[in-house]
Length: 258
Length: 296
Ligand SMILES: Nc1ncnc2c1ncn2[C@@H]1O[C@H](COP(=O)(O)OP(=O)(O)O)[C@@H](O)[C@H]1O
Ligand SMILES: [Mg+2]
Image (tube, rainbow over all chains, first blue to last red; front, side, top):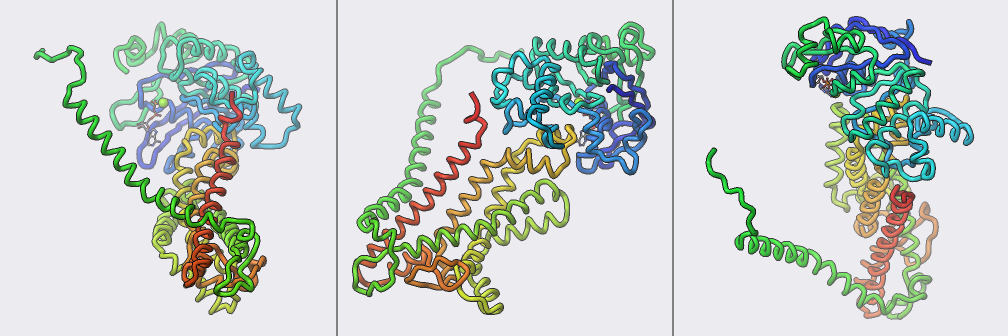
């Protein structure tokens, strides 16, 4: 299931503003890769270029290459919709569909894309909710609205919804920043268990979180206001946090800026 | 540090008084707004209830002489229901699709700006003018007969901008998060609109449509020029003159006898009841569709 992502020479723009510049990195399958860096350095932007969500914003565009196991995601005849089906995403704020029940939320990606029998759907919904560690909490109220759940449960619902379509990669943009510590812990546990099946990329503002959940860490920084963000370095998480190669990384991790 | 008063104090008398005064003003404004509404309602009910009987609801004015009592508005009720339904069938799909274009596909585009401009222009079109337009275009130029459908077209011109504007507003209220969530699941844009955006905005859109219906149900001028006039029942909105409740009220109120005036009041009461009933149905649908109902 899990696949490798190779990025080379990637720039992303919002209109005329270049938000990130010349990013080259390899994201390994079945690992958790964390993106850290100060606000506005382009972590979210970069994450969204990986499943072609960046271009959803009017005026936004991308230059450079992103390859998923040798396939160029920005190739001329690649359907962005199918890219997003292969590379799922979880957002900063939990965003379950308010008109749908818990069950329908999880089934949404499948239902909106094709035909499935009731029993197939039942099976996938159950396994996705179990995969997101939410099954026990919601199994008795699958047909109640998803908006009735707590923030942490909603976020796990969004994760269940994302994994229900069986993606190969899961992108998470600060998935815990709107959650309480207990929900955060639940999601961190979940990330660790998901990595056996998925390639996971997580943006986080929380250094301890990056250290706890990730295998690799990439540090992004920007030279100044209005300058594009760049990848400063990427390495094993243990190395980044104990013995980083660059001064800026050390300064950021030890809290000297950002 | 300069000295800053930090002690917790009771609300000062000045603020209490101001609070009271503003509260009174708000109540007063509310009363001023409600008094005309209630007095109109009261007048219509008081004068209309007398003839609000089975005969009125089931009979037309056919063979009712100028001085005769009795008679009813059945033909006008049928006409109004058919005309408003047809007008909605024309205006709601076009208006909704226009709003979807403006919100989901158009932003920043030249076409969207032009459409927006013309919708504003349409909002300002006096209702007689829409009737005149249909009269000139449909009846005089194309030689079609006066009919309920011609009236429905005139009404749909009036409905359309109301539907576009209200649906547009409701679609804009749908958080972008939800669209992105659907895209990120690999759902194409058009399906996202159909399955996520429109259902989320459904209740609001329905309310807007009801407002538009209520707005046109009472229009007299465009009907006068398009459905013409009749005292008989005509169930076919595509052929021959029809009646409508506003026309009926207009007609009866202009007659010199007390029995006719009474019929006019009852016609007005019926129209109000129909609009209220439609609103009630819309509320029921909205409530039935809402997640809260299916919830806990
Ligand atoms: N929708 C947008 N339109 C225009 N500029 C944006 C948009 N989103 C982000 N940016 C800009 O791109 C840069 C990177 O932002 P972002 O990727 O959100 O950073 P991060 O997630 O690291 O905080 C910032 O300068 C920000 O102002
Ligand atoms: Mg961000």
